[in-house]
Image (cartoon, rainbow, N blue to C red; front, side, top):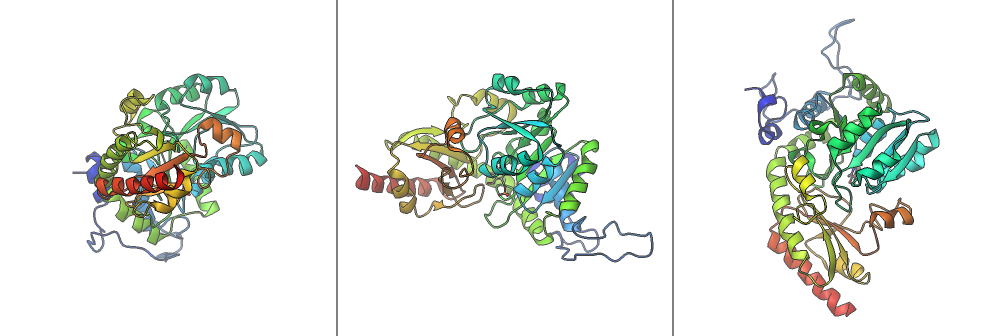
Length: 389
Ligand code: PLP
């Protein structure tokens, strides 16, 4: 049976090729070679130089393409490396509509670098379709969304965005980092390009950076490969292997992340130090029906407002199992304060309009026992009460 016809759980375990054809090794070999010998002039094994192509990275690129239902996958040294390569598809005069509620590093890259080269951006609450329609111009060449968004967990309609931008002759780009291909495949809903910070759920262990682009368009492939090779932000053979190993457990990890997140989100709602909890798995989340339509799960990310700003430092210093660190999607639970970490690059007015205030916390729920995570949060909230009431 070909891997292409298996379920996602199986593809994640076996990848594109389940063993090395030369030695039979079950674990993909790490081809730690920068260059490859040619059998003769004009002859090639298919590999020449590892910035351009490397066998370990190729296996990973084919696997991520399968997982995301795409034809092509490209691996980069980080999520930002992937986004930076992608943005070079556009030229001065082009306009992009971008989710206003997104990873701060993406905002920084677009607004502080690519705006200098004459690309313009409109920052929009893309969960409100009327606002996207209002921002559309003849020069709009792409809509770039994060769904669910980071950190407010708003959900954008992928199929409607695809239809709108295709009529305008542009592309729909979806950052699918938060749900991973296990829960959402944007290409199936008409997206042109999917992005991942592979650093998160795909690698899954808070131990390696990586980034991906996945798509099915022959017309884009040449441009993207040229840009990947020319810029050189490619993923190393060893890091490719780490991500391959991480992906093998994607299905079981995602299910546990989600089960834990659902339990913790429900518990947080009962806490008197918490004002509001944002989680797309709540039946009363404003885009719950849309989530059910375009995703197979709600994932492992939660954000919440504390009632008191003074609780922020106390909570962060009192947690011991949940680690105060900037990232998400790994087996360890991490708590982030977006205002001071992931979203510092975003100007205050835009940040506040997106909902990122000085009481917002973001929780990446790990795969520990949910009861232990709850006990840790509970004891930190008790400390907040002691110090601040
Ligand atoms: N996209 C999202 C949704 C992210 O959260 C991040 C990083 O936090 C990135 C992209 C950038 O990825 P990386 O940190 O791997 O460069």
